[in-house]
Image (cartoon, rainbow, N blue to C red; front, side, top):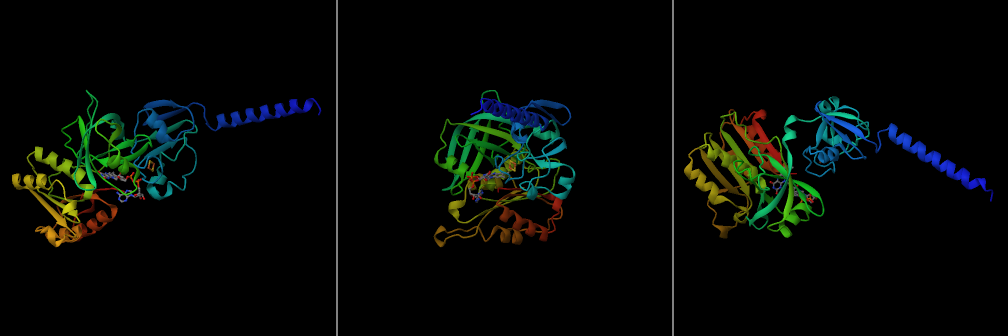
Length: 361
Ligand SMILES: Cc1cc2nc3c(=O)[nH]c(=O)nc-3n(C[C@H](O)[C@H](O)[C@H](O)COP(=O)(O)OP(=O)(O)OC[C@H]3O[C@@H](n4cnc5c(N)ncnc54)[C@H](O)[C@@H]3O)c2cc1C
Ligand code: FES
């Protein structure tokens, strides 16, 4: 073989490598890039991560209930300058035309390929990462647990009643959203009410493996679903299953203020085995005439001797509700339940802008 052949081959390889490095540099690639957030916060980013991960690495936390799989649509930000091109098909279902026109994207789907200027809601700069320890677990029903997370000594979290936080499942690094079920007055603990989802990754961990003393990373607070404090409208709250969590936080908060507003709380369950915290809410309704608690069963068995309301929660709300023109509604639970409830509320003339909900999807 000609002795020049290996030398020429090496030369070609070196040239290709050089060209690749150059292209990578020109396109942003793995070199250092600068992200500017809301005009004033700047930080360098290296590597080829998504905007979501890059922000997380710099202690800015966007809601991301699906952990970056493009299934929750919660990690939105506005791209002002830079970015990696067109909206991807994975982002499509989550963006309205108005959002597309103003540059809104999903941060888990956009890679940092060059310098970028972005905008996020100012309130998200309050979300932080907390290293917590599980200090209480209770079975509320056969498939629902209460878990309490204690923050590190000296740390505190401020949240609005109704908001949620995200837990990271150790080992599998899955991230999931859970509403705060506790009183926002207690800034050193967070309580969550977690229902087992068959074959669910996070809930199987919580129900089968989580133990007292375990360390869990919690991020938050997040969410637009919270008590409207500047309002004095009558409230109608509707929840099913673990949807009781944020309503509990809201009701505890109102209790501390002496229950200044009229609150009617409908809780839907299938049988008595699915009821929990009944005593807590019945006691509240005895203490505060402004508060009414209406648990309703859709499928009570004769041997349960249930004497309360019976029927689908939508039917119960329909027959026990009057005119809602001036009322405010807070709904929490499965998307199906919430959609059905909104239709019933509309039948009673509620105004759309007074309906607040969190779909546990
Ligand atoms: C804002 C927000 C707040 C939430 N708050 C709570 C809360 O307080 N308590 C609570 O228990 N959950 C809450 N959830 C739901 C929670 O985030 C998880 O989606 C749920 O616990 C399932 O997680 P997983 O990892 O166990 O299941 P996955 O591994 O994500 O899912 C396994 C399978 O179950 C299906 N699935 C996922 N979620 C549900 C569900 N809820 N019901 C039926 N099937 C489902 C999936 O489509 C999939 O096929 C909330 C969700 C959101 C978006
Ligand atoms: S994190 Fe869920 S869509 Fe981006």
